[in-house]
Image (cartoon, rainbow, N blue to C red):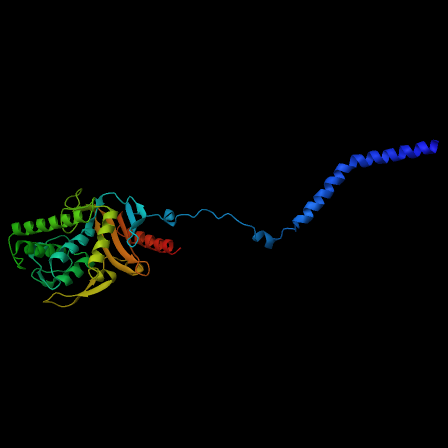
Amino acid sequence: MENYQNKISWWSKIYRGLSAAFPFVLLSAVAVIILANFNLTPATPASLAKLPTTAPPELNPFALINLEAKAAIVFDALENKIIYSLNGEEQLPLASLTKIMTAVVAREILPDYATVTIDRDSVKKEGDSGLRAGEKWRARDLLDFTLLVSSNDGAASLAAAAGLVFAGAGQNTEGTITDAVAREKDFVGKMNERAQALGLVQTYFLNETGLDLQSQVSGSYGSARDVATLLTYAATKYPTLFEATRQPVFKVSPLDGKSREAKNTNEAALKIPGLIASKTGYTDLAGGNLAVLMDVGLGHPVAIVVLGSSEQGRFADVEKLASTTISFLNN
C-alpha cells in the first residue's frame, strides 16, 4: 500500500511539472513552425546589399553655386522658362550690354551694305577702340567690330548713321553738334520703343553706349531677365548678328583701310560650350556684366546673364552657371 501511494505521489509530481512546462513547450513548437515557414537565413554582406534603400532627396545643383554677381538668371529659351534666378527682376545698370539693343535697332534701320562714316563727335566718346574720324565702314562690319570690342565710338557712329536715315539725310554724317545730339536722341528713343515692344519692363536707355552719365547715373538700366529676353530675341531675329562674338579674335576692316584684328572683350568665349552670342559690359557704377546665349545640345538655346559682378568675376560666374546648366539639363 505504501509503495502504491509512493508511485501515485511520484506521477503527481511529474504531471504537475509537465503541466507547468507545457505552455513554454507549446510556444517553442509554434515558433519553430513559424520560423521554418519563413525560411530565414543569416544576413550576409551580399544579402544586405540587396535590401531596399531610401534615396536621399535630390539637391538643386544651383544651390551650391557661389556667385559674385548681384543678379543672375539662366533662361531656357527652348522651353521658355527660368531655370535659375538670383534677383533676376532687379533693375541694375547695364553698362555695355546696352549695345545689344544698339545693334538690334541699327540692324533694323541700316542695311548690311550701308556705308557708315565715323564722325568726329563719335570718336570723342570715352574709350579708344582704334576707330578714326573719317573712316568709312560697311554697317555689318562696324556692327561686328562694335559688339566684339564693345566700341563706344562704333556704337555712336551707328546711332548717328541711323539717325540720319530717320531724317532722310542719307549717310553724310557731317553736321553741327546740335545735329549729332538730336540724332542720338532719336536713336535712343527708338531703342526705348523696341524695349517696350519686347516687354522689357525694367529696361530703359539714356544713351546708345551704356556709359555712365554721372557717378550715380548709368546710361541704361534693366534686369537680368530683360537682358536674357533681349539677347534671345536678337540672336533669333538676326542669327548672324553675333557671329563675331563667338571668337576670341576676329578680323575686320574699314572700306578704305587695312584689315585689323579685333579682340573679344569676352575672355570666356572659348570656355562656354556651344556659344551662340555674347556681350560684355563694365563701368564703375555697373560693375562686371556678361550675357551669353549657348546651345546646350541639339538646338537647345539657353541664355545666361550676370549683373553687378566684378570685372573678372563675371567670367567665372557665367562659367559656373554654364557648366551647372549643362549638368542639370542632361540629368
